[in-house]
Image (cartoon, rainbow, N blue to C red):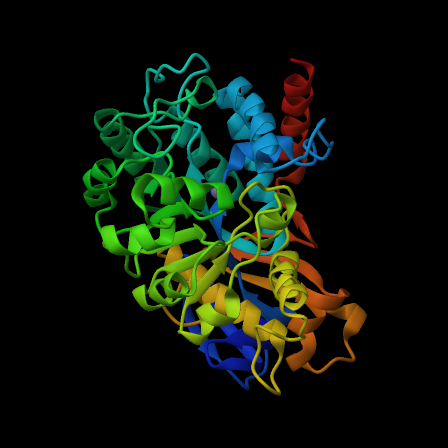
Length: 448
Ligand SMILES: [Zn+2]
């Protein structure tokens, strides 16, 4: 049992003062407000729940910052994908584990508590399955275990290079599964999750480019009621290809042909017509927004005001993992809306903190998308963050999230996962060994 006393904490109902949180066996056993600290309590100024990171491709952390050189012609998402395939083709299971551990450590240091790993680097370098078909999923599990991050493992079903079941290209050979081999992979993934406290399992049909309608319905039962994540409408070319193939836009097609509901998370959903935006919001599916990656890849801007007006849910993910930052994901989301609508405080309520609104919505939507029990409440997993506000101690508590997200002066001090402290004074407790191994692996990868 351990107890923390916070000057202020963000509870389900809003900010509360003098909060005492007691944790037992990984869960929160009580939350009291307006109470004094007990002598044994660890004391902090501000505690907030850890933010879910609903979309990550761990191996892509290895190429962060390495695709920022313009090609000979117009540059685009598709040139980035060429660099990504080069990395994807060279990494071994040891590389993937080291890179994922570095990434998950950085996520915890940033204040993320759980990752939705949209895991698609499955096969050996020649495209054959590993002797243990879930080898790479086990490496993801090992990285989660070493760092202590919460894992929602989403093994990807990837079978084709384009709409209508087109044969995969050579650069995709490490991602490919048949329906039969995918079922075996899911059994292996279940064992990974069973061995990790607090981990959950879902499925991830990669995209409508990579999965046919028949395959999509065939794999759906393998989710067993857990999350279903899919990339959709990230690029305008994908919308054009979808229209050419089926006469429907990607989100429109999904809403008409798949049982989209609250278990689903539609990653990106950037390019939607108004009817799609409305239909998606009404379906209960979470929009998996990846603002930093979407800006980096020049994807486009999510239609947030229309989606939120219909009661839509969203969360944030770091996707390509070019930069890991809770405040920057939320800031980029809000700033993209401001630039596109030429307005201020777009994802906001009149007279209320915009930062708090962004934070709470992403917390709630991310939790839904990852089937996780987050929030500072009795019975929930003890996953939370102490913020260092010493540089802005003059501010009222209601301004702290605005300061963190838009201005600076606030940073992550400590992070607890399942009641165990994993980050202290801004550094992961295993930072040295994890980053030493990562640096060695990166030198190998860039040398080859
Ligand atoms: Zn993605």
